[in-house]
Amino acid sequence: MSSNEEIKRAIEELDSGWELREGKIVKSFQFPSFMKAIEFVNDVAKIAEKVNHHPIITINWNTVKLSLKSFDVDAITGRDINLAKEIEKRLDKN
Image 1: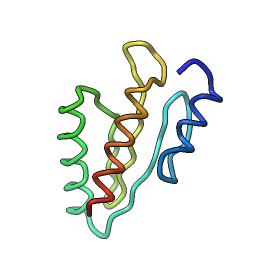
Image 2: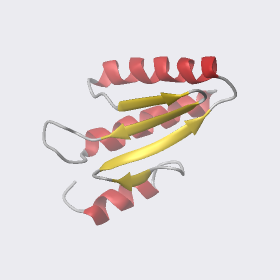
Image 3: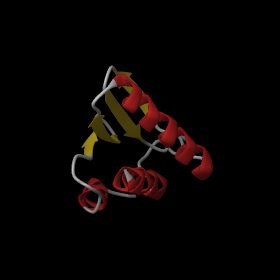
Image 4: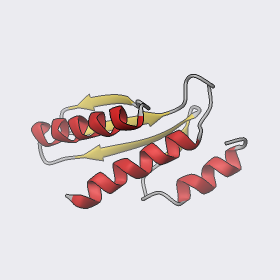
């Protein structure tokens, strides 16, 4: 993605909560328990392995923060948007 405007438009197409912050797209997810948060992280890990694109994951009890950026090109790319879409699909199933 070549501009912040393109990135912002792509983020608007995702489910709410995704933001552009410090050169990454970021979203925090809250769960009813630590174990539910870990289940989500495990699901995200499976998705990330499948698409060979891995987020930064921060876990703080029942809150999981995901940060997406293509570090190989030091930019947000379509891979990041697609990974966010796949993560949202996983949430929609539960």
